[in-house]
Image (cartoon, rainbow, N blue to C red; front, side):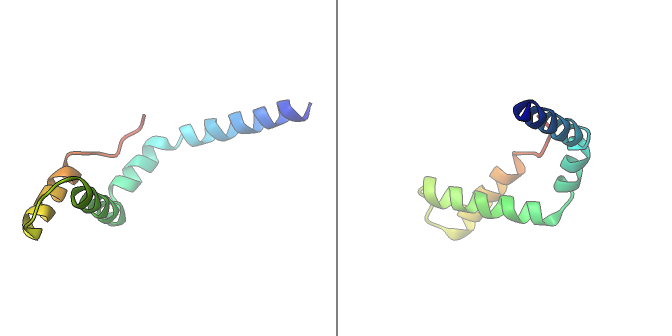
Length: 74
């Protein structure tokens, strides 16, 4: 009985979240903090994975990487 109550609770949570997922995606995409975080991650990725010597070039590549992705629902 307890397990089925957990399943019902989990299903209710999933259903509630799914009804707000598009609104959250829009909220996150419009928030400057997500862009800052994505840029930080892109810069870290470039630093770790690409042998770019000039810092300006590294930042430009990171920016292009960041601009190539989007936040969307799945």
